[in-house]
Image (cartoon, rainbow, N blue to C red; front, side):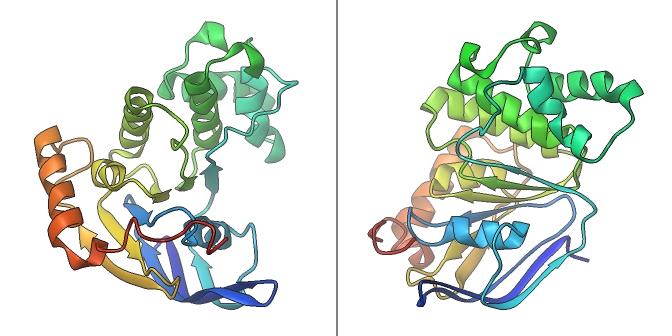
Length: 249
């Protein structure tokens, strides 16, 4: 049984078709990366899948109980503390007040924050800490599915790796299924069970590649070798860097 399934998804902006015939599925405990360059329609697919926008055609089946989303920008409430930002989903679902503080602190720790960070405001945080706060906010309500929409694009290489490790650790043991949107082949290799490559014209999924082993258990050398194989010898990835990002929303 899949937690998420898209069938025949099509969409248009201002009468112009940007997606057509998109099919994908994500199973329980599975991290699936949707790979494609900027402007290829990846985020549009994620937003349709999450219910943020309505597709023009096709069907979305969501079989999970709760989902969360982590965006490229942390999208924190600047007037609220870290604790209040993380706990906002608990307020929305009217979770019992008696254990909110405990759940907030537990989510913060999972995301690599310290108890003393909870009283800070976003302006006092580094870019990495803001993204950690966004991840903690996504985890606090214990979702069984998370959408990641290019969450680490703006981070430097070292910080990006640490954030990827957070996702790998949080998802280990089948804690949730995830659709991870990225244009970075190495990132997709590090965090995914499967990689779906978007067709260059936006007309569905061109193909998929299963990544051997478990996320977090592959060596850097294995990842590099696989990246070279994908980019230089696999025809599925031939146009991965050739789309003009101005050509599509």
